[in-house]
Length: 174
Image (cartoon, rainbow, N blue to C red; front, side, top):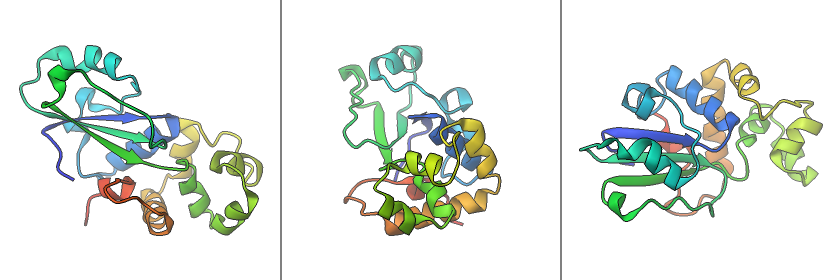
């Protein structure tokens, strides 16, 4: 994955933002907070609002927009003026980011048998009612290496379509 000088990291929800913040804070990503627009994870999912808020500042260098989301179908279409200046990279966490917690807990087989969505499984079976909250995820993965192992395991067990990126692709290779 080749990234431009400037990066915008857009996360779908609070859990995704917490995961990226943990990885950034521990220098585990292929980019740093200092390279990011506003030096923070953005929560702007609408392309036209993103254009207005961030791209109309007159950047002379290209920008990579890294979107962390669980949907393969969500469209993020920027205007023609930005077609050659902005590279949109989708990092897919399907079915849901909560899979990282399920894997960390060693409950993948139990989850598969349940037929539930990962977030529902975490709430009901693992008794984690706040599993979608930023604070819960930050506290749960207070050891970033546990998070890293969950990301690696998620990548190992997933059927990832050719050309699709996962969180593993964003991790620095040490």
